[in-house]
Image (cartoon, rainbow, N blue to C red; front, side):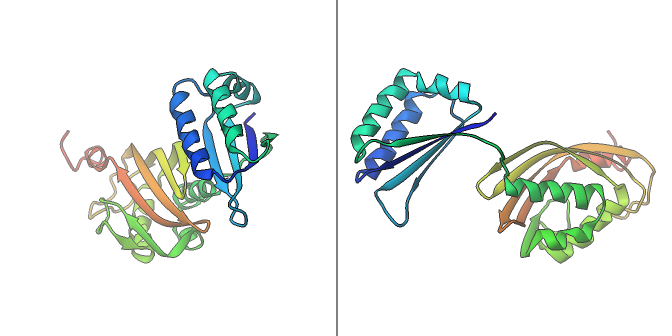
Length: 231
């Protein structure tokens, strides 16, 4: 179970504390069990600083706390604080990465169910799509729907998300797909051939919606499977 430790302190030396965190990251490289660390400053009180550190489990957190480097940094941190910092230990009950949810919905509803119109509720009004296989590398939602509808109808693809990573407002997806050439595609009449391939997509999210995307697929491999290019 994911475990969080929240460190709450008051300090008039926040910049020094921030540099100390850099020292801890460098000193524990290859040893620490922490996977994520966030330091925030209270907008209403510049002396109020909160650090949130994520671990895979409570047991891994204990391993981290027993590192000599962690103990040394902790003592130096206390010296920078105006009083003893407080600690709150949290077992994570729910972890929702909301940007991942909208990206998963895109593949489930738009790609696998073939409902291209579902993007209207998923995308911002100024959504931009970048895909070298489309007629333009930079196009808006309306034109993207037209060209993606052709792909959906031509191949009726089913996509599988192999891995999905989120950081900030960006979500990166590694995927595979299978389909059958049952409709016209780029002037080619349906061949009835089964097709499969892999690809990557990166999405920029804004306000819980998709604002921009970048796509890369093995288009050469697809053309070879359709018989348009000799292997």
